[in-house]
Structure formats: structure tokens, C-alpha cells
Image 1 (cartoon, rainbow, N blue to C red):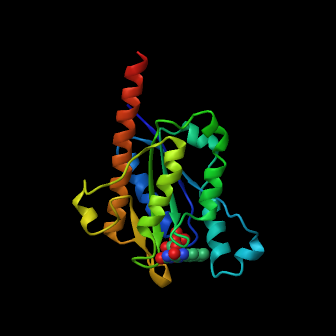
Image 2: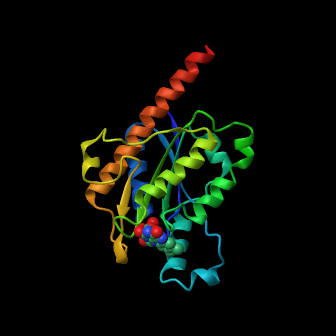
Length: 207
Ligand SMILES: Cc1cc2nc3c(=O)[nH]c(=O)nc-3n(C[C@H](O)[C@H](O)[C@H](O)COP(=O)(O)O)c2cc1C
């Protein structure tokens, strides 16, 4: 049974974007249809221009990825959220997208879909786990069935977290390691497998 996957992410410097693309590869390798969408900035270009590279990176990514919409979330059988950490928490940009889901949340339209999350931090203990766990909060409110990684793949013993894929970008936006990307691909595959099982169970209940 084929499933639809929405990967809704925010990235300023490209680390979270690289994980998002690896998750998309993993999901597609399991036969899923994938929408890769980048949440948009919530500040003006004047503000963005004050941080090195922000405006340029945003223009590049916004040309490449559409903005996520509530209709994308409704379309999806699984939603995978990605954000760079912001003081151990979700970025305002991704959160603004989550808040836009209030209308379909009120109609119960997201209940029972698979949900999962990933992140990027600049330091090893700068909030990898807390950022993903913060996303577990809104996934619970949306009624998603949260899909962690556990240690189902031994790679998680040396990269990512049992809560979801992650990478440490350092002070100079170091790209994710090969292991980080492989954990992300695993997350994509695993979420698709769970979403398929959920979809089959829902179909069996209605027949
Ligand atoms: C306002 C702000 C707060 C941040 N807070 C943290 C933090 O708490 N811990 C950390 O390790 N990195 C923090 N960072 C760094 C980014 O999360 C980190 O560089 C991340 O890898 C960037 O991901 P990206 O390349 O997808 O934009 C912060 C960055 C900004 C701009």
C-alpha cells in the first residue's frame, strides 16, 4: 500500500535541509510519494540581511522548495518535521507552520497519521534531544502516532538519536556525516513502514 509523506522543515544554513533530503531518499526507497517543503521566514529581509548568508540561503532554498500548507498535511499519511535548534527548542519558522494547522487540527484531520522529527544543532549537547522532544509535544496534540528510531538500526549507537535523526553542524556549518545521513534515510524508511501499517489497519476497520 503506497503512502504519502510530507517532510516539513526549516533550515537556515543547510544542515537540516541535508537531513531532510536524506529522509526523503529513504522514504522514496520504500515506494512513498514525498513532498519536501521548507517553512518560510517570519522576519523581514532587512533583518535576515544582518546575519551572514541567511538571505542568500533562504532565496536558494525558497526557489527549490515550496512552502508547506495545511493541505499538504491533510494529503500526507505521515508527517516528518525538521528544525535547527533554537535554544533547545523548535524554530519560530517551523512553529509558525505548525500553528497554521489549527484549522485542520480542530476538524481532527491529522489524527492517526504517523509523525516523526529530526534536528540540527551547532554543539553536541546543545539541544539535539530536547528539540526533538519539544516536537513530540505538538505531534501529540495533533493526534499523530509518534515514530521514534529507538536503536532499531545499530547506526543509532554512533549517530542521530533514538528520538530522531540529528546532526551537529559546529561553528562553520559542517555538513552531516555519512552516518548522520544514513540514520536519516533509515528514519524515512521506518516512518513509511509504520504509515503503511497504520493505513492498512484503518482500511481493514472500514471494510
Ligand atoms: C537564535 C539561535 C539559537 C540557537 N540555539 C542553539 C542552541 O541552543 N544549541 C545549539 O547547539 N545550537 C543553537 N543554534 C545553532 C543552530 O541551531 C545550528 O547551527 C544548526 O545546526 C543550524 O541548522 P541549519 O544549518 O539547518 O540552519 C542557534 C542558532 C540561532 C540562530
